[in-house]
Length: 229
Image (cartoon, rainbow, N blue to C red; front, side):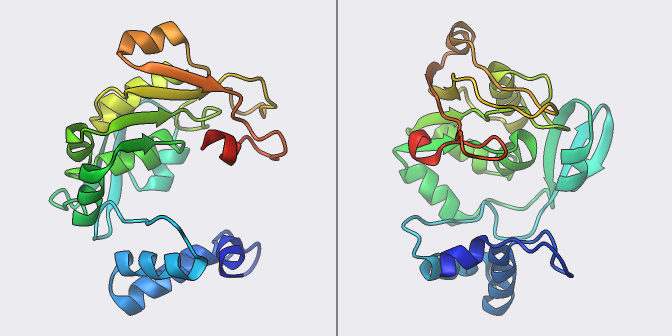
């Protein structure tokens, strides 16, 4: 019941658009005094087998330079149109969470994605210390391509374009492996499917692994979770 409740998204009222899980995290963080403790507590409630740790122990504001102009905040960056040249977080002297750095150092494999290229994946990498920890880790680095482009962030970008942008903006080393979908699936007219060319991925120094990874039953393009796993 806790797992199902945490996934519930409200459709009306003052909390319309919010998921109960996020509201629970906000309340737990306020009462426990730590987002990391809140994540651990909610993980126990829903019976999570893994562990979620924050990239940074303090709240951050994401900033970006888009077509030469600065934009502040995740939403403003995500919905704005234009070329994202750089990302940063404020306060600039905020450091990565020690538990996140420990997890990266101990990992056998680091998987990045799927997710919003700039406002989710690169946003985590630009937290001071995170990209450096990923790049220094002996773990195999895997990047999972999104199924489609994202309006406002990645329109017109193919799989290799995603990798190049993540490395350039997020400071990431070239992944060892790129995972991408290679099967045709229904795509809304507002976005485009993301295809990855084997020769172009190889030219970056990575290996491409492909499969039919889209969930045919989903109303909006999303990965088939068991197949992706």
